[in-house]
Image 1 (cartoon, rainbow, N blue to C red):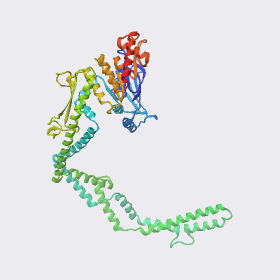
Image 2 (cartoon, rainbow, N blue to C red; image 1 turned 180 degrees about the vertical axis):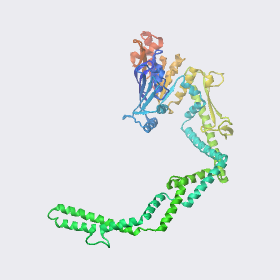
Image 3 (cartoon, rainbow, N blue to C red; image 1 turned 45 degrees about the horizontal axis):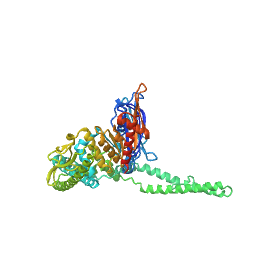
Length: 585
């Protein structure tokens, strides 16, 4: 849930903090006091479009900050996204968000202690917040949104079917597109394949090995300088270990080290320090002996073989011919050959492969058609339940004779999507199935069933949206729901029913409601009032929590415009008592 919201420099709000509670929070106030700025601030905080025209000239920037505390799968998903982006939740598990907009229109976002793209705020907002207002109702008019609403209602088993359909549909389209491309571009593919085969044949004849060029270069250098290397190794060997030409006048290093060690050992009893040095000389003698042995081995292996050198020259020339054509070095040539072999398999246009792909496409098409049929059947079953439950909710929202129908129709074939026989009917099929879903409203008995976009007024659409959200309560979705004057054009008993249903939603969600209706405000778990201050040269607004007597006075103002009227306060207290009783589970 959203625990706290602070707004600075936005519209008429100079600086205010909204302490929000779980359950139902209502925001009331006089017209023009700035209630809309609260919803605007929420939109900014969760990645909405910034409007520099709403930023106050002083201090020249608007800042919206919020603190989220999430639970369950939503918390896991959001925290994982934040950590992946470089931020981190606070030690107590809460998450800080902020958005800054300047009068010049520049915008910055921070999340989890790190600067983030505004789009990241939007990703978080999609998972934690849903705003319903006059403009947001437009989304319910889109066929794709109506289908998504029905799919969401249908439940987890339906979601599994949909996921299987999407996965199979993706594989089918991949095979179909691959087959069509191989047939359509067969000539170009064959030409490319011929060139790749020529290259592979040339490389195969040479058979280069990874790192071979460097090894041959080093060996060629040894062979080219064999005599100089032999002389150097022989002199070094004679110096450290003596040789056939060594004389007493030119003692070797091993003999000198032995003499030095024995001399020091003779005096070690007098001074132990000399004994330690003698031990180190013994280690040095061992090392010198090892070097002498390795020099002997080196001399034995050193071979000035002109034939071998010529072979290396020829081999290196063959490798250079490959590197001039295919890569900068031998390792690159080997890698090119591997890529070429892979590409050849992609370019295959043989009849055998085309027949195999054709069979695979047919098999997958059958699976897609079967899954689309099962999804369609599941949607038909869910549509009946969905329509019944939404209709029941509408009965208590000043629409007692209204009825909702959910039409699940085959998608017409012949559009941009491929078509398949689904449940015996040729239909266009996409990743979401073969259905078009349309919500229809029967406003009263005898009225025709019209699509929502044609049959519902703005106020009716608000109540349809609220009825759908009540039906969805507890079935997942964002944990915080915001309703911006969804009660417009409603009063009397219908207003009480709207309050009751919002309170029911608040049992499983955090609900924020901007309202003019006292019947709705009375159901709140926390009541916030936006008040305007016109005492200075500049109009500002602030938000405060009202309780007990103050709350009754605010409801009296909403009821009759008379916050100090004893009769109005009495009516408000009665309304609060009724709402408190209704809120009890």
